[in-house]
Length: 237
Image (tube, rainbow, N blue to C red; front, top):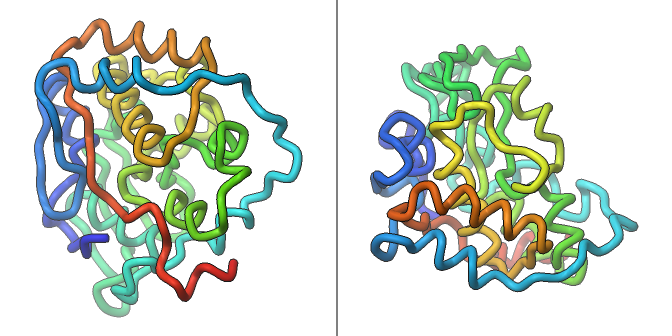
């Protein structure tokens, strides 16, 4: 995983919320674009389709300790993503703990949201919810792969807490961001994560992905983030 530095670069998926669905920016801290026009739609069409498996056995702990420092930069994953996605970042006690920043705009709502440590106005969302991943393949993985997914910057985004909690563990068929201008980028990111980790989709989910991406046929597919196996020190989890 590339070390993320505060204020250096916003994730490509966040940049798309501002720039529009067909533009992709790149940088050392965020996902990279790949392929030409139609890459996201083509990737969505390639995802395997199966029914949703039971949620039986799912707990957050199945994906390891929350915000594990899998890149060994001495900052937890949550702070890494805050540094990546917020503007006007300030720290407390060094250069890890983000104490202040602004989502401008928040990709889900389209409005500016101020982050202050200790208040619940900004969440770090798993674009592919962990319980959704559990029901679509992750149940059968080893701990290393689940820990990687839970801390992969490709699957993480700082967002408005209220909008995120409305999402819950929904997939594309059941929830899309209220900010319509971000929907292409959001779905492309979900497709990218599911393709990278070999997760399947339901028939309704695949149809929903294709419906959104057909409105932005030049949408590129984000890539990058962590390897799909966590470092050895996490594998016993």
